[in-house]
Image 1: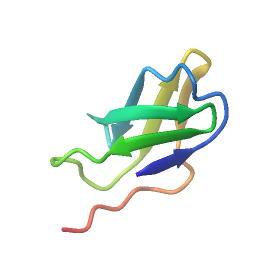
Image 2: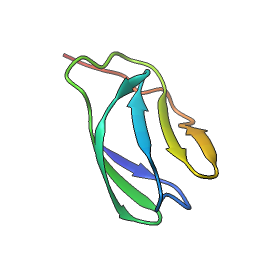
Image 3: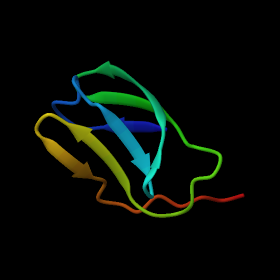
Image 4: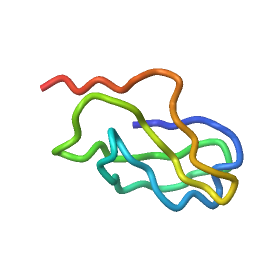
Length: 63
């Protein structure tokens, strides 16, 4: 999953509907995250030193 934004360099966590995900900060504006196998539809949150940022579009899991 691509997550685009600003000031993402020091992100400490990414969650999909509160389920922690593994992720890699590729650049200050791009995070590559793996959707957890047990994730369900809901919000995406990225935690950085500036705060917790919530995606503006709900994530939908299709199995």
